[in-house]
Length: 634
Image 1 (cartoon, one colour):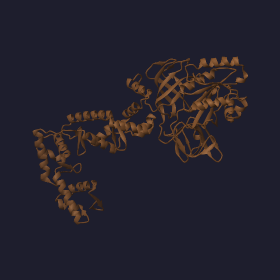
Image 2 (cartoon, rainbow, N blue to C red; image 1 turned 135 degrees about the vertical axis):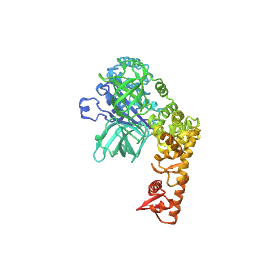
Image 3 (cartoon, one colour; image 1 turned 120 degrees about the horizontal axis):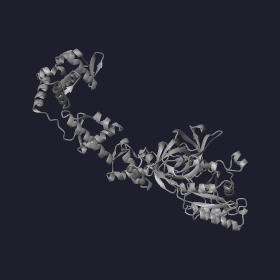
Image 4 (cartoon, rainbow, N blue to C red; image 1 turned 90 degrees about the vertical axis):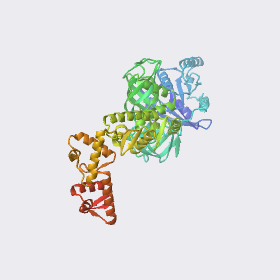
């Protein structure tokens, strides 16, 4: 790992800023008020070279309890922490709170630095060391190096650097292959440059001229230039402290807590599912709808908590919960967060983001709890499958699933391909994947619907494709609907005839009386050819005593089976007469440039009453088009 980020933590006035100056030669207190009061209020940043050639960025955080939210913004994305404890005071309240926060955020490595060691004798120093060892027992710092330092005299500083070097040798690399993500911790302007943001690049790579999005605002920005450790670079990688000069956005439009990321790589949310842990030493418990402060990345948001698998959460316990945020943010699966009590301010716990784009759940829902357990255990295959199953009605592709889960698109792609081999998913064009459970459940619903329809409408050939689309495929695009329909046809579930969908094997069965009626109606149309009876006259044609509904039902059968063609609401032709009219029209127009209505009337030996709707029908199907008062072939 070429770059590491080191964070400081500890009580106010325990010498964090002085220690950084001793390590780097850089003064991190930059505000007038900080210099005047001698305390760190805002985040400070410095950098130095380690003996092994690695570059180390270092974040100076405030120690005062009033500036905890600034401290939380600073420890986002650190690889190693220096827990600073003054020898003359020992462990203090903010020492403990900072240690709790670091543990919640799953910081894995650290060094305990006893500053101001020149102010105490050896006996007192030993007592402080014993107190510290006792206090950090059971935490990630239990076996951490403990180094006395005098930042003023310089003693212990080189030893500290060597320990930092040793601990960073096997520090896990941040993933530079992921889409870029930078929680913004500072925004300012510089004359001649414009808007500049800083932060720790926790994922991905950023390059000059790259187009990015500021979440949650959705602002589009472009990278003008990049600096790492005060030097201009064309590219920066995960694990580095960066300053990025942006174009296309104003300083006033961005604030600390926003996230700079690749377009469409994340999704805004106001509901997240989490694994929530309450500190053992918390003086409070968490109950339904408690108001908390949620800290994620460099952002602070007020939220309400809804425990899912418990009624309440007591100190030292964990539960699955849903956080209902009071403003939008963007996060990913596996992100760590901290929660503090709304008032009075007190760090009480934190945990792991399990679903960054959750929907409201019912309390104690076993399916939800089972899904969250799989996510908590880190089974990425199960996570992807759950999302695929849940969102199959939205025609998901790999990118959609990656955004929903917060997992890399490559991992999602590879997992979906494995699902195809194991017949867990079915792939359609546009790289759309649908879970087999969704396909089977949809099949059952479709079959049930068609079965009921056939029972109620035995003389109808089926349901129109458009009704099936609107009822079952309202969220799908045209091509996908056609592909799923074809899938069910090949599976022997349905059949489609003349834009009607029916169960496979369904046939219209007519009684003897209905067959006689059908033949009479069809004969009436064939015999009259281009002077067909209108619907209201059919009762006279077929004989008295036949009800209008019976005639209407048989007409639907004739139309759906293409024996009768509905030219207009009033004019219908038998299929042979229809095809004859079309041929006569086409033959005439192939020999002549155009045809007048009167010409076609004479050809069909009929009246204007029939010719007008017949010609308008042929216009509508784009066989002909009207030019002034004549028709020509399209």
